[in-house]
Image (cartoon, rainbow, N blue to C red; front, side):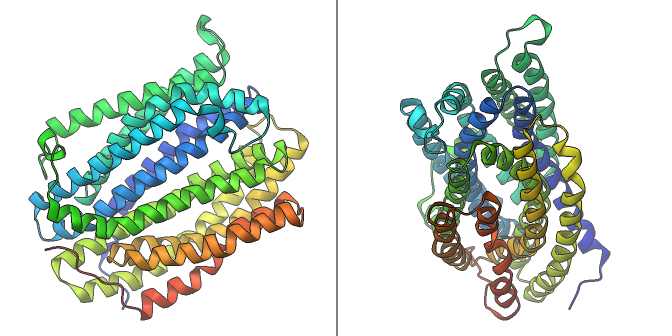
Length: 448
């Protein structure tokens, strides 16, 4: 039965809108680098794009760690058990910091080899290494910020994330404008200037969030000691829930990086076109990401409260909302194609490829906006994280990646055909998503 209560839709919008805006602005930090470097030099843009694949994998891993925490903590939030939420937050933070330290060491000792995974062009690798040598210092700040924002999201506190991202964008844009092009008497640094802007913005973002939590946060009253030790029982619960999600997010990050690597080994025009198209796609995609995050919290909270009828009604209503939003997002992406393309100083070949890529992604957007919030929002938020992991393992690693490699390197198909192959899973996963959420068992009570 579809929910008609206005309170439901108001709660959805009040949670979803700040998350969407925060994600849009957070992605705009990278888009700002891309736009400004796209007008500076294609080699600098391509080098930064390669490094951003590392950032994307890292970000996905952090999201997996944070999402696992949100799923478990949201059910505790439904029970008003804040002590257990603090324990879950401590385990998640320690896990994220270990991951951050490993990645930092890898990119510090093997920068050229890491960038070389995504391109063979020496000029692009050189620009990428210049950017990476600075931007790696953002990793600890980004780690702490991401996990703390996930903790707040599990208790329905989301507005601070939007304000933080807005300030980060403004700071990054201002420093980029000065240092990429050498304005106001400063040196013309190109990719290195973009990295300095991103690092400065991430440091300020983290410091402001820590001050907010110390002075303003009232639901959990987090202290440093909450993150210094781990409760073994809660840690076991956390990793049972989170392990499939972390694996899924890491594979999704690697999948996206492989997509860039596949296109990057075709032509330099394909790299630049894919950078522009994927960044715009990711910004519009934030509506689906925000919807999934909102469904995570609302479904988890309802399960924690023990109201199973409400959980089922939420699931039915969410599906209609997701489909309508997907159609609107597909139309929006199509409308933005030409205005955004005009901002890039592309060659004719890169421009035409970017246009074709975006037209494909307009169709992909509709399917993705339904299946991703259903799978990663409703079903995963309901506690059935293993199903989502299995679905992505089969669809991405048994179908999409093998098919794309075959078309790119055996058939030697055009980049347009390869992009179709790389995104097919966003369409065919709609079928299992519909069957599982409407006829399957996905509600799991995770709290003690």
